Amino acid sequence: MISVVIPTLNSERTLPETLSALIPAAVDGLVREVIIADGGSTDGTRKIAEGCGAEFLAGTAGRGIQLAKGAARARGPWLLFLHSDTVPQGDWMREISEFVRAVDQQRRPPAAAAFRFKLDDRGVKPRVLEGFVALRCRALGLPYGDQGLLISKRLYAEAGGYKDMPIMEDLDLVRRLGRRRIVLLESSALTSPERYKRAGYTRRSARNLTCLACYFAGVPAERIAAIYNRGPSS
Image 1 (cartoon, rainbow, N blue to C red):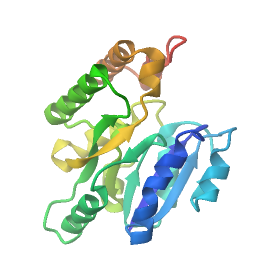
Image 2 (image 1 turned 135 degrees about the vertical axis):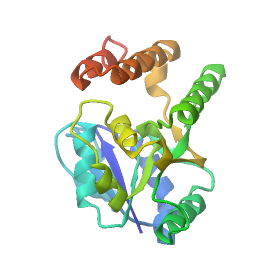
Image 3 (image 1 turned 90 degrees about the horizontal axis):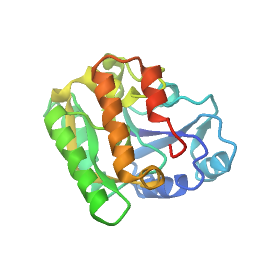
Image 4 (image 1 turned 90 degrees about the vertical axis):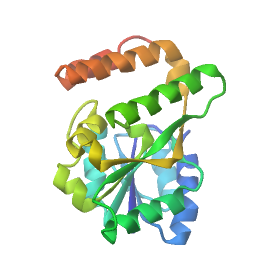
């Protein structure tokens, strides 16, 4: 039913947990296949992927083009895009199954769905960040890629799919879908806090907001990528 597409780049530390979370869904028949769209990993990413029975697509780095390549290879009628450091939580299998059936049976209009954002970290700062993400999703209908994206192949094609962009490929797609066709699931996606710990929660959050503002201002994606990757703590 669902093809899971995971873009990777030297993801050997986080990928095993993400793949392990998908095993029950594969046994249940909800997940038909897992496609690893790699961007040139030099670590054990390929060995891990193939050892878990996932299809490994070698390619060049660039999350947008990796996601598009994985989607083009997928055979299922539904796509679930996940980051390699993101693990679905809670009763996500039931919720996704019900969402897919409702759309397929035309009990609800065609739409895509994203998980709620949750960081695998303790303390006040992670909870505050989660609150800001929830507010952004409610106010703007803009889930990021680390919240996953469940979408039918038909709607994905209609929206134009992922573009070859150095950054913001996730927002580019959800904006083309429009907030009326984005549903926020009750289930959450637990995401690694590594990039926030490395750069600092305040600094990384400020940089993300700057990139979002630049995106809405029409700044070219190449310049936004330079802002996002700026500094030794990126």
